Amino acid sequence: MAVAALFFYLFSALAVAAGVMVIAARNPVHSVLFLILAFFNGAGLFLLLGAEFLAMILVVVYVGAVAVLFLFVVMMLDIDFTELRQGMLQYLPIGATIGLILLVELVMVLGTWSISADAVNVASAPAPALADMTNAEALGRLLYTRYVYFFQAAGLVLLVAMIGAIVLTLRHKEGVKRQVIADQVARTPETGVEIRKVRPGQGL
Image 1: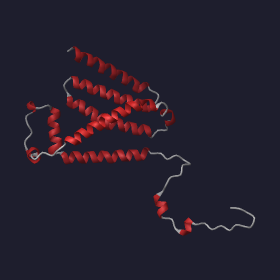
Image 2: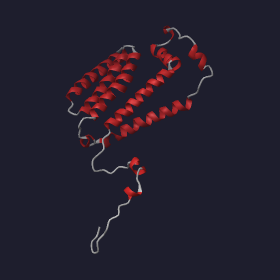
Image 3: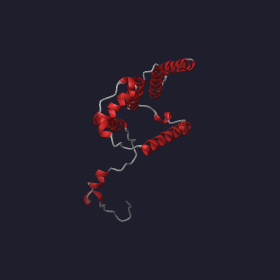
Image 4: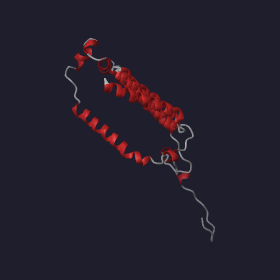
């Protein structure tokens, strides 16, 4: 009980502090990041209550969709990103460590992944009683067996929406030459060659 109480006060304090920083931070990007931190602490509180499904939904839906959407909207504002990039290298070791951990997890998952011979029977079997498993496990069995195609379709829709948001927030700097494939393919000798008459004694 002492450990649970310690984590409760820790998550609560961090959630309240992150909520205050959401409205106190001057930079809107920092506000969104503090909002994500508040969501994670709220998920920790749900885990302490034994509601792991609500914790998972809070992280997947709010952090993975709503907060990222807020971040894309903020990126569409006129923000001085040169100031934001100052001091970015000091977070490089932390980001590299997290990326390495995720890479190791993906390698471990893909290395041990296999399709069971009874996969068709498992998909058509009735769902076990909720008393024999947690609600998150029961939901996972339904999503990844009976409704796996709908699950993949929803992920595809979110992927298209994410690509569209990236395209909308992408800005091209003025004065920078970029390669335009369509213009290069459409070039003709008339547009690619310019004939100029040079008078004697004068240069181009």
